[in-house]
Image 1 (cartoon, rainbow, N blue to C red):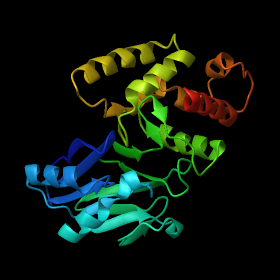
Image 2 (image 1 turned 120 degrees about the vertical axis):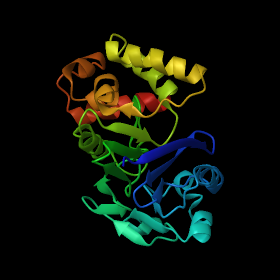
Image 3 (image 1 turned 135 degrees about the horizontal axis):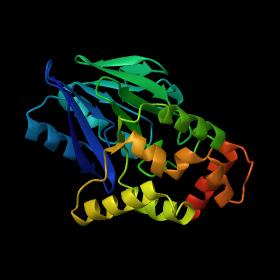
Image 4 (image 1 turned 180 degrees about the horizontal axis):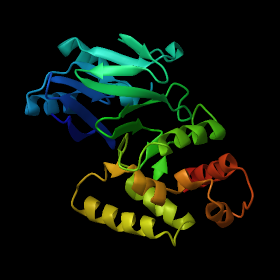
Length: 255
């Protein structure tokens, strides 16, 4: 039986996710921005929370962990970097580790840059990527703790996944990302199509995720920093891809 995924809003613009294994009835929350919406989603589905898979230590991704742990005694899985002091952790994971959620397998990718401890969870059989604040639809996370070469390397890891994988990211930032991307890449037909889709979805108060990685590779300018046409638009012809990426991120920071 295929895994079931539920998506809902937490806090202001965070996404909450539950992934459920019908075969074993195991259920994982990807991060825990706040407990309330996760509890409501679990109650609505009749699911019991068995795991929380944490991507990084920021408060808007771990704020609900303690309450959920207390209620369900669920396993809390977190990045191996213990300096971040994430509470209630049962299992620390590093790159290439595999986490079992019932019969589902989540492969860990270290994707630092936004934070040094950031990891993404890849469910290969389900063709699903939970990238939190490393990769957004038509965007990427701010680089708070790492540097631009580090973040670019993390994006390359995610870009290497197959085109038919679905991207689930940490925030509903797609509309603002599209607005910025069109200032850099206005003639990109894939981006124009995504812009129209996002306008329609938001008008209907629907989430803009998941998106397909193949579509992101064509429309997300942050994944295309190594393309000569992108460098040329930034007047950076011949520049290193990480430098082009850094310029894109700096411009987005100021937009």
